[in-house]
Amino acid sequence: MPARHVLISSLKNEGPFILEWVAHHKVLGFDAIYVASNDCSDGSDALLTALDRAGIIGHVPNEVPQGTIPQHAGYARIRATHPIDRADWLMMLDTDEFLNIHIGQHRVQDLTARAGAADIIALSARSFSDLPQTHWTPGPVTRAFPMALGKAHRANQAVKTLTRAPARFRGIHNHHMVGHKGRDPLQVFCAQDGSSYMLEPGTPLGDKFRHIPKDQVGYKLGQYNHYPIKTLDSYLLRRARGRGAAAKSDAENNRHTMEYFTLRAGRGHAEHSIRRYDDLVAPLLADLMANPEIAAAQRACEAAHASAIAALAASMPELLDGAGPGLG
Image 1 (cartoon, rainbow, N blue to C red):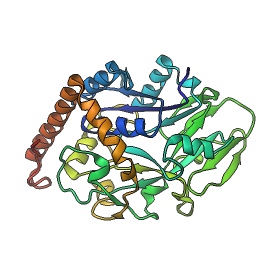
Image 2: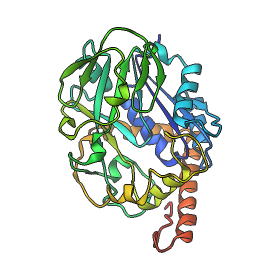
Image 3: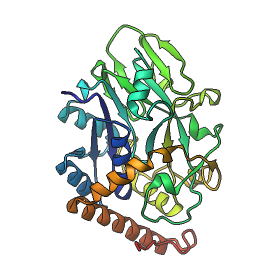
Image 4: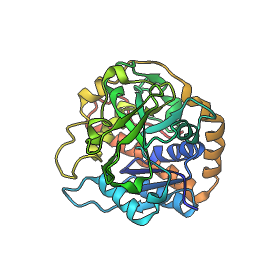
């Protein structure tokens, strides 16, 4: 039987954060999770392979030539190798993004049921700062960074979507699907406030589902928690690895700049709603770590991340004074 709710992602060097992300979205009720990986040097691909062998996810190695957008290529490879077009609902999330449902039993099924006959469900970002940590240490991201940026912060204007019957769309982007093949309007359900509206045929979906006006940001029925910076040392590794949503090149990452970090760092208010999942995520993580291959791969990813941070700190001591985390 085809999976009803499918989650896909594409990543590079996200090793320490993968396991929590997978466990969280299994608890959320996704029937299948598929992850593409490219150009990994931190063991992310080995961890994904171990999860694949254990039947937890599907891992799709993704070779990305210069000039190709890694995420788009990853989604296309997933689509070519797994039956995601047969899903009832498809969602794309990065490994720093965690779906968080506020209704029913707090599962993805509660949100799609509330959406009724909608074709697309839109959710606002709730972005989180680096507080209270100063240096990266292993452990669940959703516990380490509880400080949410103010609702009016520009970072929260981002939108992610769930899409019904994905085979009706020609392509997959990281916020939404593109190229609707039909001639009928699309019904959009807004998790921000529970309202719905119709999109006329031919409406560019990027105009609606990349950023929304500040007065439309809302979290009534659900949100996706976004942890884009974590700590400065870990953030600088993110900057160094390049962008997944831009064409692969040797050019400097001009999105994840120090300005990007400082606009999100050192601020926020406590927002703990995602901790409602702890009692289910924690035992699942323990079960996953009971698998020797998964546990070894997870520890290797954490060690690689720590080593990369230590090397980075040695090269820029004026910025990362005292960085270089130990693993206990």
